[in-house]
Length: 262
Image 1 (cartoon, one colour):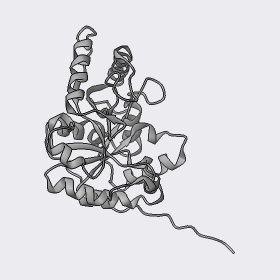
Image 2 (cartoon, helix red, strand yellow; image 1 turned 180 degrees about the vertical axis):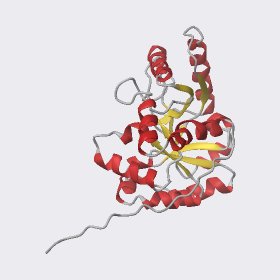
Image 3 (cartoon, helix red, strand yellow; image 1 turned 120 degrees about the horizontal axis):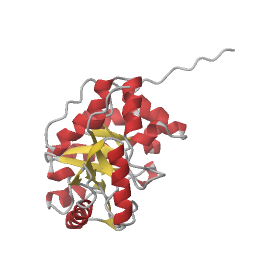
Image 4 (cartoon, helix red, strand yellow; image 1 turned 90 degrees about the horizontal axis):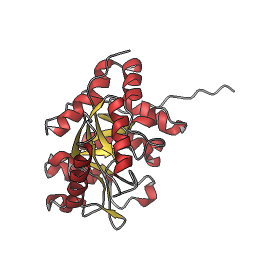
């Protein structure tokens, strides 16, 4: 098996008590220990910002991160934590970011965003919002597009979003999910070159744990060690350091033709 490089997890809900992730500091410590054992060296903490539901603005994120950093000093954990957020996109999202009220990933031009899982709940056009982000100098990273039902129905929506300037992050557990729609579209996007990050989207130690090693090994075996390093280490490092990310070649997802015998 390929050697595991220093893994970077850029989508986690590991800050204690501020969203639907870790409930308290003790759980956060357990999650961090699990991540470290799996080869993760750097974690961006991305609690939800969901208007009128979970409104973790920048100051709140920084405060929670500071508390967790203090707590892990006694644990001798070889892991670095950075500020971020997972921002549910509405029409005023970009203005809130420009006003410095919402947290980008480690205060860089990279912004982790999500859209509703169901098309009927969309209040904005994703492609238009992605374009607006890029015009203002931001690079939107779309969280777990494989979970959106309208992407499962039409994976080439992701091709359009990447063409507009977005990057894509899929969840590590989507590669092994019992939900065949998730695994199918996740692999379709990988094969088309439309994935730029794999992250845990961890919320706890069991249902969605902060484990990346299995995903790294899977990508190394099924695709290449080079791709595994890009998706789980190098691109994350570039985000943290506000460096550009090369998209490489990408194509539309090819639908397999079905043949019927009469």
